Image 1 (cartoon, one colour):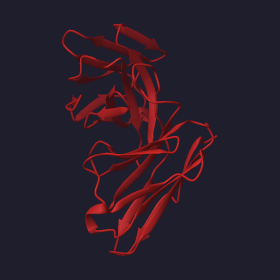
Image 2: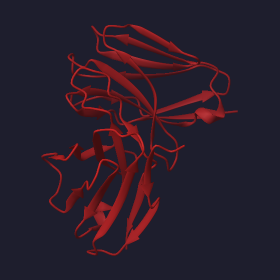
Image 3: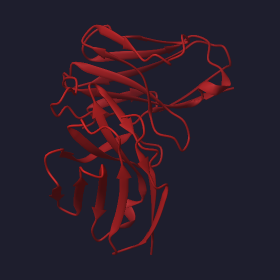
Image 4: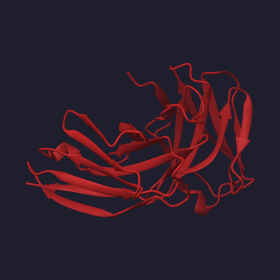
Length: 109
Length: 116
């Protein structure tokens, strides 16, 4: 998995849903991850999905996986100002995480 | 409580002057990783330790070295920093290596390195 692609920017109104999309390349990836990075901080593991699942819900977060199209999305319901951050999707092959370039989510009042 | 701790949070060094960044973990994980992250880019893996076994990425410059004296600590040494080495350096750990089982990586808050 060398090329994980994400859109770079997303602007969303507070209270609306955010949807961040990602495409990956390695069909053998068993787990796919979403990480959140706030300004000046490290990466926080938000959620992950196993490749034999097509959906996972965790409170405000919903992950959808379309394995046929190698498409992963993260939906954040009721987006809050604290959700402003960069979101990275990542696939794992052997030991190595391959990250997308990150989607900067800006939440406006 | 922070489980992967990086010190210092900010480090300034002079061009060509060796610098060491440190990472410690309380998770007792087997694997420790060092990443370099430049502005507006994804983290880039430099190397990792599986226990005492060191694994360098093919494109990691020779200028970057690492030490892991025990399970809890791992150091990143930059022998002769250049201006292009200014970046955020992230340490991460995982219980074991990926290889088909869920071994998520847990990151520290990073050390931002500036080169004068």
